[in-house]
Image (tube, rainbow, N blue to C red; front, side):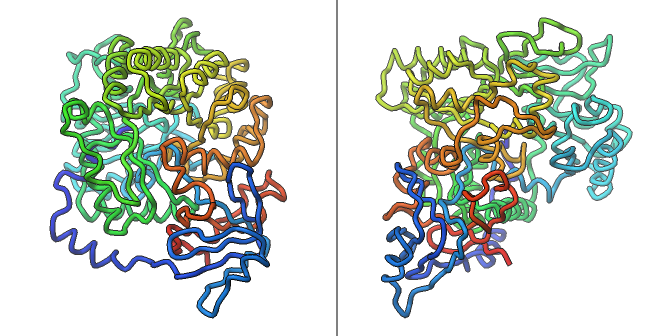
Length: 569
């Protein structure tokens, strides 16, 4: 997903900053000494230690041990938290998402179908867009997000004509649940200059009305980029609402490090300001877009250090090599299971031409950047690994730690190559819950679906990995990511690939210490070892007692740098 220029046409007017400072500089401070006792403390160290208690001093972890050991540290000034058997573990780390994208709900129409939302028919989707239009000034953008054509009764996308029927006074753009396509009305298409004479861009497709070249409103992959750039602007007040909503949601879910995967310079500056002002208490990790920073990455004008603080880290440069399997834009080596538009040979397509991918990867790798490359289909993954292998052969680096984002259809031979190349995948394993039944029955068929997000293969070859939710593609629910790694159950109740299931502690590592390691931050977070930042979460029960019910647990306490940022009442 692309959040370029997100709500920062004019970045933080001085008056707006003054208001935000007044509202937010009263953030929580960590107590001088706090102890947590009588619990199940999952340290997430190399030995997967389970302790009973933990001590923090200021923003750092002090000691871990038995309740008796930690209680011996208590003085009159110590704050004591009795866990009463509850689980304490490192704060969840969002390995890949699009913060603050989940805050879109305060500004746009939520078009998700079950199990995320409630839209079951096209009429439900159109009604929600109509309601959004009724609340929007004529001429301003009307937006919606999260519709899923395969879950609607009609099994199709909205159309340009249907959106025109809602309004011709508003430009309208509604984003597919995958984030890799959208549908626009005539007013929106006119703004970006897309008409019957507009050719498909490289790595993108403009949908056409049957038998003509007239756009039907559907824009896939690179065809949607210009419109996204137009849509993503808003007032300072709306930007504050969006960031605050997302930050509050992540705190409720126990997320202590949030990730924004694919940012332009404007969004990077905005995230930096909101972090410094305290609107966003989470630590942030950013993946800058190669396409937005361009030559600045290579000519010396790019300086991530200008934003760096203890809560803000600009990490690997992001590229997108293909699209999404559920959007039929993922690039496969073999055709989709159910032919797309009747084409039995259709395999999707790359977002970046193979030769261009080789050039971009080589240049960025030579310049010393860590890379994070989106690849879903196995043909795309092959191109990515080929490009990275060539770059590494030309300019070897001891630990490049390239991140393969999603790696959804990675084959076993490709996992073996990742081990040899030092590539680390971040799996979107919750796909087995949200789309598993449809992957098996529609998109890739039973055999390939069994091995999506192949975490057991990764373990077999010694490949370290993380797990993510791609929020707002799916809700920020870290325990869903863990549960899916352990059980791989679909919404329909089937187990999709039992041989790819992993153990509970390994699954928890994928959203804590291994996620921190993936972006070179494991020395300061990701486990509850003495000296590390006191980023932690307390759950409402004992996670290890009955792991299958972990999704029923709630977050009771979220702590960042020793300070409580959320407490359930």
